[in-house]
Image 1 (cartoon, rainbow, N blue to C red):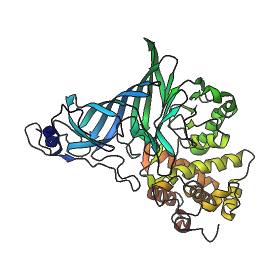
Image 2 (image 1 turned 60 degrees about the vertical axis):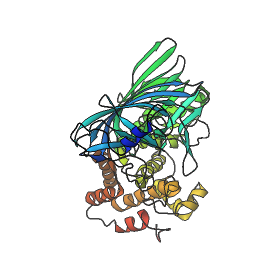
Image 3 (image 1 turned 90 degrees about the vertical axis):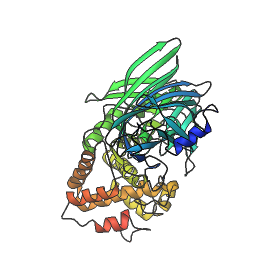
Image 4 (image 1 turned 90 degrees about the horizontal axis):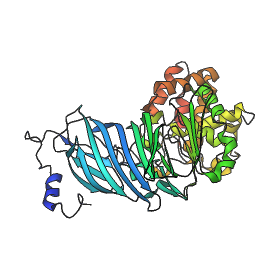
Length: 469
C-alpha cells in the first residue's frame, strides 16, 4: 500500500525504502529493527529494535457505520541504533505518522507498518511515535478457525486479541514479550458504553457523544487488551479486601449471569489464598454476545465471556490474571504456562468445593474416561510444551496435559512445597515474561532434593501417553 495517496511521489517512497532520506546530516548510523519478534508460530508478530512502555489510544467508534477513527501515541525505548522500525497493523487506513513530533516516512506491506524517522534513533533513547488511522476494523480467522480481532455484536463491537487480533484496532508491537501500560480514550454515541481494561478515570458527554477514559498502569500484553462497545448493565462493587470489581453485562445475559458473577469476590479471595497477592488494581468481567465466538478470554483485569459463564470458566479466566496476564509467556510455544495453570485452578476449585479431587480428575483423564470424552482422546496428541503448530496452541494437550504436569509436580513434592512453588513463581515473574525453561529451573531450585527428570521427559516434552500415571 502506498504512503497515503497518489499525491505522494513514487520516487520519494523509493528513496525512503532505500534509506536515502537525510538523517540529521551525519549519515546513517542505525539499521532497521526486525520485522518480527521471532516467535516460532507467528514469526511476523511483534517487532525488533525497541521496547514499548506506553500506549495512548484516542479512539472514536460509530456503531452504525462500523467505522473506527484512532490516534495511537506509542512511547518506546530504542534497543539499538534505529534507522527504521516496524509496527503491526492489519487493515485500516493510515493518514499520518510522526516520530518525536516530526513527519516520518512510512510504508505498508501486509500487517507491517514500516516507519522511517527523519533522524536516526540512538540506542537507549526514549521516543514517541504517533499514528493516525481510520476505517472498518477486520475480524481475523485464526489457524484453528476461531474468530478474533474486531468482532461485531448486536449493538456494537468487541476487540479480542489472542493471539494476533489486537493489531486490527491499534498499531503496536503485538507480541506477548513486549508489555506496556495503556491509556484508552474512546468516544461513542450517547447511550452506548465503552469498557476497557484497568480503571475508568473519567466519563463525559458533549454534543451527543460520550467519552470514556480507561487507565491500565500495570504492564499488559496487547493480546489481553480489550475494548467492548455496546449497551451494558454496569455493576461496581468491591471485594472484601477493597479491590474494585467492575462488571459489564449485555442486558440479555443479566439474569443468567447474575448468580455466577456474584461469586467474583469469593473466587478472588480463594485464588489469592492459593496463588498469592492479586497482581492488578481491579477485577471484574465483561459478558457480551459477539458473532461466531464460542470462547472466553482472560483480558486483563476484566475477562470476556460470550454469554453467561459457569463457575468453572470464571475460575479459569480469573486464574489467568496471575498466569498469563501477570506472568506472561515469552513466546506462544509457552502457552501451556497460561492454560495448564488456569485449568489446574479449576481442578483445585472443585477439590475445595465439594467436587472431584484433582487426583480423581487426573486419573480419569489418564484412563480415558474423563467427563469430556473428546478431551481424553486428544490429550496425548502432542507434548504441552511443544505444540506442532499455530493451529494447536489452544488444543487439549496444552490445557489438560499441562494441568497434569502440575499435578505430577504436586504428587512428587507434596502440597506445602507445591503451593510454595505456585505462589513463588507468580511472585518472581510478576508483571514480566517467562518461558518453560525458566519454569522447570524454578521448580528444581525450589525442591532441590527431588528428581523432576521423569516429569519433564515424559509429561512435559514426551510424545504419546506416558507409561505410568
